[in-house]
Image (tube, rainbow, N blue to C red):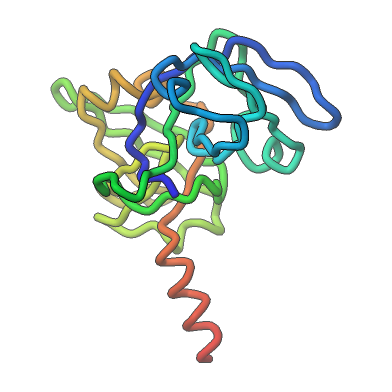
Length: 197
C-alpha cells in the first residue's frame, strides 16, 4: 500500500524491450537505498516490482497490460518519474490509501496560475467520473491530491509550489496524459451496494 506522498523525483535512465513489454532502469538514490529485488515501488503511481537494483537506482519490468492501462509507455530516457516506496507498518499515514493500481489515464486540459500555485484541470475516462467528488481524494501520477472542484468534463486539483517542485506534475502541460487512481473505498462501496440490489 502507498499513500501518494512522493519520496523522490527519479529519472528514467534506460528502456529496453523485453518480450511484449519493457524493462525500465530508473535512477533514484533515495528510494534505492533500502530496496531489494522483489520489493514493490510506485513509479508515476504504478506499482511495479524491483527486478534488479544498484546503489543509485533500480530496474522494473512493465508488461503489456500495464503499458495498455497507464502512461508508462510514453516514458523516455531522461524523463522524470515520481517514486514512492510502500508504506511501512510503523510509518505515518499521510495522503490517502493508494494501491498503485491505476484505474485509467486522464488528460491535462488546462493549467491556470494562481499566484505561485496552479490549478490543473484534468479530464478522466468516462467510466471514472462517478468516483470523482469534490473534496474527495485522487492519485494523479502517484500524487495524493484533493479534488478542488468539478468541471463539466472532469475535475480540478490545486497544486502548491512544493508539489510542483518535487513531483512530475510541475512538468505536465496541457495535452499530457496522467495516471489516475480513484479512491478505493468508493469502489468498494459501489460494489457492496450493487450486491444489495
